[in-house]
Image (cartoon, rainbow, N blue to C red; front, side, top):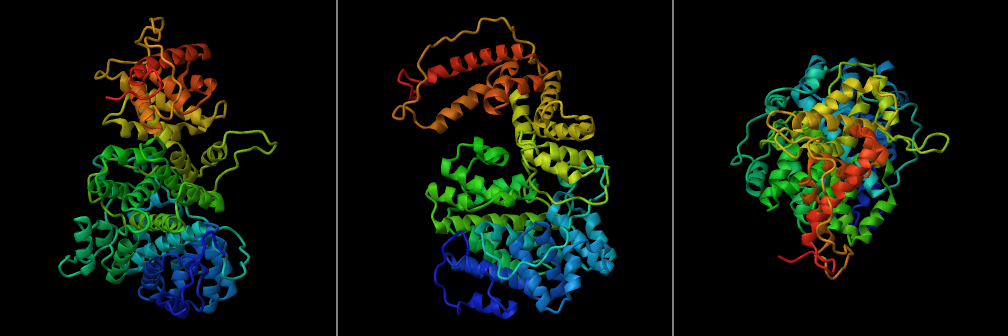
Length: 605
């Protein structure tokens, strides 16, 4: 029935009783989580407050949002369950087909179309959501209370869809036919809007009014103040629905703050890594601060946000983050083998379940923050801007992973389908290219010019230039190579500024660079402290190389570009690149040799 074993749990279990009474059946999604009954209790409380309680939005409208967003995610479990629920609520079969298909052409009230447009945009293009979208709902007569519920319903759908994929649950009913895939409307934004200037806090503003509540008068706020030292703005922004905030505080305490299964630190790692992948500045800033309070240094958190694979985390923690990111960002690729990978790294079934729930909770919080426009609680160290455009095709398509192999079976550039979609006017596809390559671009910028206060600006400039010139890309090289070349040029511009005197061309190409300490570099398990310490030494040594050699070593040995790809990215001949690579490796060897004993181990201080 699911990827994880179930533990016998009585049908008299209160959440089961409440769910069965409200829905008419007990969903497999909750049966699949009986290893952690407390999690089911928290989820049932949120579902009761957000979905099952009629307030500003009717139950039918909420179920329609859930169905449309689930269909856009191609989530068979949620589509099946909520198709059944809508039918049980008396919604005609034709109306359900309209929701699953092209509802814009269907005989549906304009207000309901606007509602679905907003929800789908928040789900598929969350970084594009702005005050103009909220004002659009207001023009259709929706109150702030109703808009808050739209955001909550969309976030809940993100939670449920992620949970269903991570658990591998079988649908409760026969799957309905889906006539056509729904998709999010594309927002007509300008390039200037996409890359705002000025202070980063000028852009985010709370979209909805809120009621001021004090920790002394409102127990959930007292709970947050006690456990976090402050009340996060994401919860202050939802005080129009204090019952929902109360349910969320219970979920945070039950899922995030518990230490009996996964450690709190590991859960914060999951929140941080996924939020960074989702380009969510608010959640990254919050959870960097949370990790700081747990004793994790800011540079460690920063590396997790950039790319956890290059961090100093233990192998098991990196595997855990691989698992969470795949579930969050590439759910169509997720399967039972991913569960087995965690088990092979020593994770119990309870820990796997909590990892799935934490990933789902992160998707819930990320969608919630984007929809509410919550202002950061702390000065963000890492700013993720939405990528803007002046193109406005009729509709965007939901994200799916393009095939890496061409029709004739030959390997092809996996980015080409996305590039072609951007060139045809589909800006959502460019956001996917940003997600795919922002970590590599960042590392390239650091590799050429070093890490500095302008690195984030350079990162944004690289993608802006790529977007402006993508129409000129004709596939003569791989897209990643073309993008790397833009990044190298951007870094070179920084190096050529009056403040910097070093460049890729200052060192003497014919200088004497020979190994100064000839020692055998043969790994000895008893001599090495660990692979992690060795890797850390290598990274530090690479960053100390002269730029012209550093960037070549980085592209060839770290990013694993071929000689031809690296040469094309740097605008060098292959012979020149090979020469610089050889010299860079020798310099690296000279720098590292003192750290190794004759037996191959890391030298003790």
